[in-house]
Every structure is written in C-alpha cells, then in structure tokens.
Image (cartoon, rainbow, N blue to C red):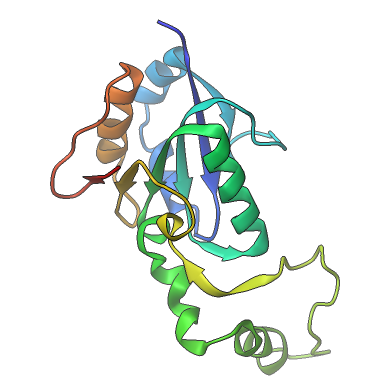
Length: 180
C-alpha cells in the first residue's frame, strides 16, 4: 500500500490540537511508518505541497493569511479534517466577533493596553490584515470531517487517522461528526 501524504496546518488557534496530536505518544512511531508528513508546524516546510491525501486543519480563519492558506490547502488536499473547536466553530478565536470590525480589536490591543509608545502596526509583514469576522473552516471551504474538542483527545485523533491509513472513511458517532 502506498504511503499517505499527511499534513497538519495551524491557523488561528492556540496549537493545543497539535499538542494533542503529539500526545499520540508511541503510536506516532507506527504512524511515521505509514505516512509521509509533508507539511506541518512540526517541521520546516515553507510551501504547502500538491496532492496531499489527508490534512488536519487547526484553527479558525482570522486574517488574510489564513484565508489564502485554507484556500490553498483545500485545493491541494483530498481529505480535509476540521481539527478542534476553533476550526469547527471559531471558538475562542471568534470571541472578537462581537466587537464588530477589526478597528476596535487593534485599538484595544495596540493603543489602549500599551504601557509605552502606543502605535498601530503599519508594516504589512508584522501583522497580517485581520478579517472583520473570524470564521470556522467550513464557512470558507468544503470540509470532509469535523473533529471537535478543545483540544480533541489523542484517542479521537487516532480514531480518525486509523481508518484513513487503510483507505477507509472514518465513521465516528457522537463526539466527532462526518459530513460531506
């Protein structure tokens, strides 16, 4: 059986889902024998590759860089898992949505709470342009499976990956939801 090209992506979130992925502990050795990890914050890949078989996407879409990335990820991936509550619902990342546009968020962060030399970031490379609303992944691109949890447990991550390694679609009930 050919090795699966696996990717993980970290957008607007805390990286807790990736920490939970690392909680797979010894099973990571078995996983490494069956997949090629082609993109992840756990490695130093700079460009999202073509023809990814499975991708776990952590985090919500909060800025222009996230929006561009998720569109690239969807276009280049066969099976996309919305990985964790931020990706599934927006969760904590979306707490800024009731403030309205990005201006109140930037004002509060860079001006109101600054101790010295308050100033808005003006260099484009420092802070990617924020979107007016934080959205879950499925609001932007098609998602093949939701894996909720803050973060999802290592057992749930394994329950999704194990059938995918066999070429099967995971079927989980209750906690994790598959849709197409």
